[in-house]
Length: 116
Length: 115
Image 1 (cartoon, rainbow over the protein chains, first blue to last red):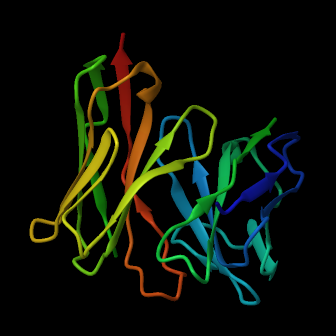
Image 2 (cartoon, each protein chain N blue to C red):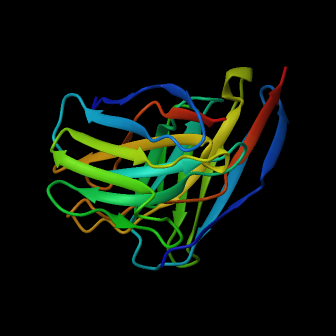
């Protein structure tokens, strides 16, 4: 099946620093990648939709200047949390969809971000 | 936009009993309905999905039913086992073939199977 990796799996950083999370599709070309945030005991909340070679589409309430998304190739998308604060601590999960997929998304293993 | 409601939020069943989780959606154009199982700290795993051109789909102990008229779909797990304990999410989307429409998730159901 389709495999999506994420790196790092967990990160602890100081308040005010920036953190980059990578999402890679390992065995297929991901025309679209999605970034979600999940707080403890809550559902996945879509942050943005990223298409290769174009700007990401952010959901209402998500600051595009704070959460920078780059989808430079068909196998890699990155999410950079800029000037992170404790309230940004969360589980960030990406998913990817290829050209052949009919709705199905393949999820990465997630990145747990803790901001001190 | 699409809105997905999921019930119940928690469900406890005895091992061997059946579990049913129900979801409703608002967008009549939605045509793809997956169910995910998520264990603590792990990624959501697709366990079964259904498209709008069928009413029911089964895979061993798991089945999903879809009622397009009423705009609801349900997950049925029979002969539950302790390893079925997890959080289950339903989702819906309008798949137009372009691949860029996101899934909209329900709030999740925490299933506990008691041995």
